[in-house]
Length: 136
Ligand code: NI
View 1 (cartoon, rainbow, N blue to C red):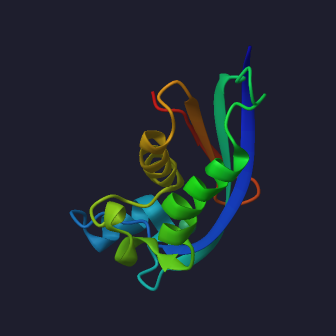
View 2 (view 1 turned 135 degrees about the vertical axis):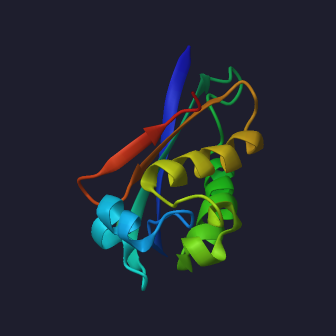
């Protein structure tokens, strides 16, 4: 039997949505307030879901302590209280939209999990706006 287990986490981070290869006016038209050169912050809420077979011996899909540590090492330590554009290498040339942040989180976490486990990342940028990525 395959079961999905999930863990919530959060981080605070600043970003600016813009493309270096577009003019300021073009960025302003597309990204509006999010193109503020002085950056702005979000309280990101994260839900990490792992799906896999329940181990016959332990009864676990994954030990939640292990999942907690992967989230801490790959997401919280890397992103919390950071300026994503300036301080996180993955966004040096990648616009830090919620979509891209979810993909980066997935790509950082997936190799840390057993290959038999499926991963889904849900990222809330605001209480009402959220994105989901599961590797396809
Ligand atoms: Ni924003």
